[in-house]
Image 1: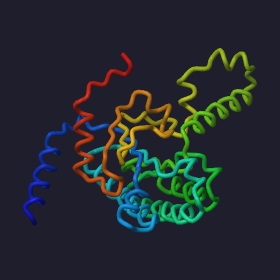
Image 2: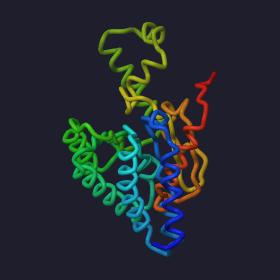
Image 3: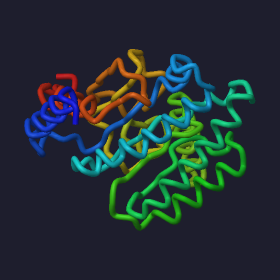
Image 4: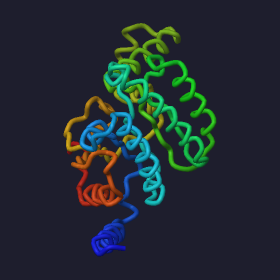
Length: 253
């Protein structure tokens, strides 16, 4: 091992030892950003960047399992991304489909689709449904895959479903509005029944939500990393966890 590698490994171990297990977030949201820029900087086809990003997802989930994270939500494909040129979108959808297969092969991951499946190609929507069903009993890391996801679309879908259910139970608009509260809407989100993320990480240096978990991240801590997603290292992840552990969460108070 070269000397810089020895120093790097020592630093990584030191970071890991500094983390208290009771300060590891239970739920982490990740915006896997920078795949296209990574490919451009490498002088490679855009699809190579998306594939490198997909490989990093599998590596990242391994880190989460090692560190005791219980739930991860990955922002893999937004509703806006579906408007990209077919020359880029079609290979990207193939890579996403292959990544879902790889997640299913792990055997210990519970994979849940988070997004509007009705706007996805039928074969991808079917794959997501089948993967959710086949991994439902897994007791390992819970992985939400946000594919065809948009934060505004999620809230609109939640309100629509809430209204449909209320109407089916014979409630008037007056009764609905009188009883409407944030807890009710939360019960109809794509992530219903799950805790909100304590930490949201975005790579590539961008510092915006881009519609990711807009409702659920109201009290999340945010960490922005300069590294492009394919270059995101375990030490970068450990730094994010250390930064989170050192914060005093106030929840608006």
